[in-house]
Image 1 (cartoon, helix red, strand yellow):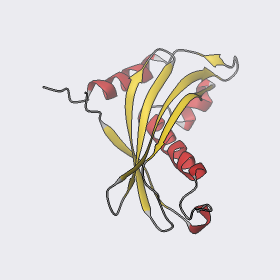
Image 2 (tube, rainbow, N blue to C red):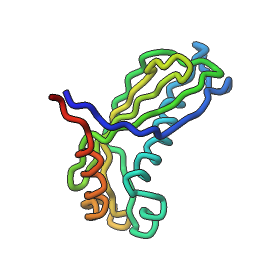
Image 3 (cartoon, rainbow, N blue to C red):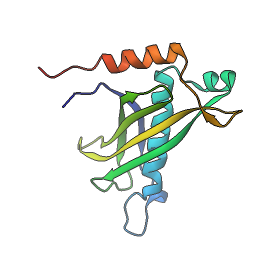
Length: 146
């Protein structure tokens, strides 16, 4: 099993208006927080808002698998760390882990696959060389098991 390099991509708090009928944070807010973390991960990899706008590129979600491990209640401080798992010519696979900051418990994870899109043609296109190099370096920096 490989050990991934994780970077912090989100910090926030759970608000009372985000509670559902079970008095815990509703699943839509887990998804929203993971989405916000995604944009920070992309920016760390060189895919910033400017990059997308200037190159007429975007990202499209292809697959998402979320695991809810522990409830979060109003007032909980949360953080998300993100790991790049794999980069193919036109797609990227990554993992977010959400933690309760106070207890340190991992409360949810989501693994996603996204496609690099030409926003004019509306189809997947290869990542440019500078992004490939940056992502490859991110993956190659992972410690390997002995």
